Image (spheres, rainbow, N blue to C red):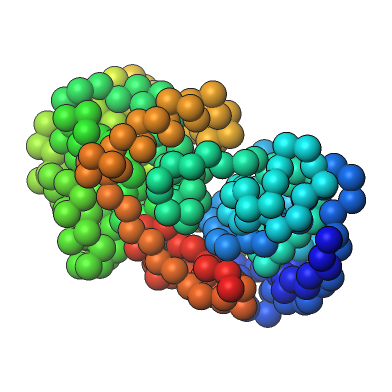
Length: 340
Ligand code: NDP
């Protein structure tokens, strides 16, 4: 049994507004050989995700806050290098919540570690299109928004991990898709993924202009809005919603670093007249869909109906930079850190 070392990241201070690199501190620790019931794993990939910003506030939420000085957590994929657990063997691929570190030893259940079946997909996909963001798109669109064939769907953050999957699932279900993203390159990708209309929200940088672009793309209005961004996007979606439209509210990244209370949509009164259903959701409430999701996703990827992009940063030392990049639009598709 081997003792190895791991570089890992802890929260040094709670960010105010946009986080800084100085809010994170890296340290090296020894990773002991596994005791009875434990496994020792070397991570090969770790994920940075927008929801982690919420865990940096000291407040009650659906997940507990990160504690100052403690190693951060997040999705990761790695290989078992030593096992003292009857269900795990050396060489097994595991997915866990023990990210932000190169290696770890723990009882699998304590870090949500599960052995991954051979899917034929690259390991990194288990943190993106075939992992948590993929399931978020799948559950949000099919269950929360109750997608129907022929719907007109608007999705914001359409070049990101969740949004790019939403675009493609909606196309697979024969819907008309409008995607918004920031910048010409991202918009070109969204169109390549099959969106019928693309809105560069950085060009349409006033609320009226965003509404104008949406009305031009969907003259008869939208049936579904998949919200990744909040703010003006949500208000504009309410404005162009058809009666009985359904909103799956997945995230509001435009507000995660706000230091002042953010104004709500000014047109909420339309929720009454149009009889809109606006429903927030958290992916972990929909894990019962995982088996069907994995089956559908593997089929779609293998048949070429589902494509995925990744933005890869190299090395554990780049993890905070990768995380900050999410709020600066530096990623196309899933933002990942490849570990050495
Ligand atoms: P992305 O891959 O979409 O990365 C973030 C992207 O958000 C950026 O690349 C940028 O794209 C965009 N963005 C950043 N700041 C702003 C802003 N101020 N206004 C508009 N767009 C902005 O992340 P994910 O796909 O992982 O997550 C997308 C959303 O889904 C997030 O809100 C996240 O919190 C949420 N989420 C929710 C889950 C749930 O269970 N409810 C689970 C997983 C994710 P661009 O350059 O186009 O602006």
